[in-house]
Image 1: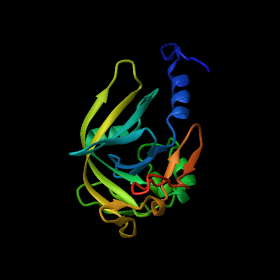
Image 2: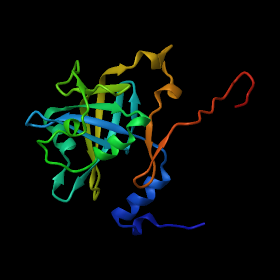
Image 3: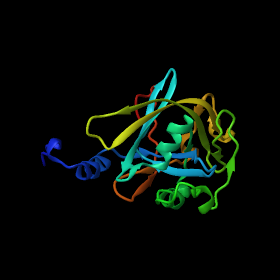
Length: 202
């Protein structure tokens, strides 16, 4: 075994370590609206459910050397965002949407994607997303010395492909969500292990 004192790691090394430890990670493919009206799109794999009552989701957004990323700037200004779930077939598009472009340039247009109007937010959702969550900014958490901010959004409305929604649950096998692992690597949910309580076995 290798023992690592995390207090001795610089931020980049800690990032590389932990993104290899916490796997696979769901991807929040976030749409926001720039001040110019352009629809910005970026993926974030440090994302999770914070609460189910109320329904809150959290996304960690790091800063660049020159300041906040466009997504963070837009969320702070408008108080909203849409969290889109990416299908495994969109891996290349998700990766390309992480490229840094000027704030007034729409990654949605650059990638040839289509959007649909949202109901509770000015920001649209991706038409291709099997699930999209319209969110209102609830809170932003900061941590001493951290280059990241944790954005918590309250889910106001969920758009779900009807074929995926059964008895109040999501059919994960059919959702086929894209996940992130270490480095520029992604994974699919190819095997689902289902525990049968009646027979107490998988």
